[in-house]
Image (cartoon, rainbow, N blue to C red; front, top):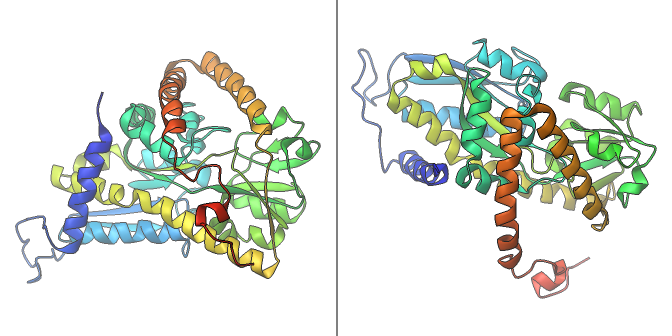
Length: 377
């Protein structure tokens, strides 16, 4: 089986060396280039629409990666990063990139499930794996190749996988268990599991979430980690932040390139693009987690929000319900969707016993027990 993770690790090391000046891409200077070796005029000018907006951490990281690519390519490839909605709506981004409206896109694959349903389990799912489990499955157990099969149907080349930190439910009510949500409405990308608990799940794109929450169309909404929700203004209209993220567990964001644009690049530029985005994959997780921790501390100290962790006993039954939904999906859609679920199940059956045995020594202890001293109030 192809070991993409080893390739990614090597790519990240090379990228780091290139960025620190320890290694350089050698290219012949173009006519009129500066003495620095930078080409005066790029050979390739690309546009990259991302699901995020200016000022958000993920947008800035994508922008920095584009700048790194420009430098590493000695000015041969210039990528302009633009925010969501510049050329296409959030729900149409993947199709627009595949059609050549712009060359690159970074977004949540679930938006393209209408073309290939397997993109749902490839990127998200209620009661699914955590971030490190997903990365391990993607890079070591065939998830990357299955993802590329799905993107082939959209004329897209997969070059990066960004996984967010823990998502949080923004809520007007203090839910302490799944049963507490019965009779209420929640914005979510896949409402089927919560429907088992009497919750009316409503799917809507990014552009509509704030309005729906502020006007009372829903009592709760999920749309990212805590820092991201702060940037959307959702913390200003919510009293409670509820964990854990049983809905879109560590949502995966993919970076893709229009295949015609990708094939037009020489091999060295393809490698530079791939290594640059892979080199920053982990930072999308670390930064989202760290900034969310800072945001939680601020909101707790100000008294603006209360944070609740739901009863974990509820999730035993919820996972069993989700298995039934996954089996229904595999039977209904077959093909690549069934192949993806088979691969995930095979991986989890091997992985979870190992994960349980090898878990961190502090797993299950309180924060004070993990610290070894009391937390200051």
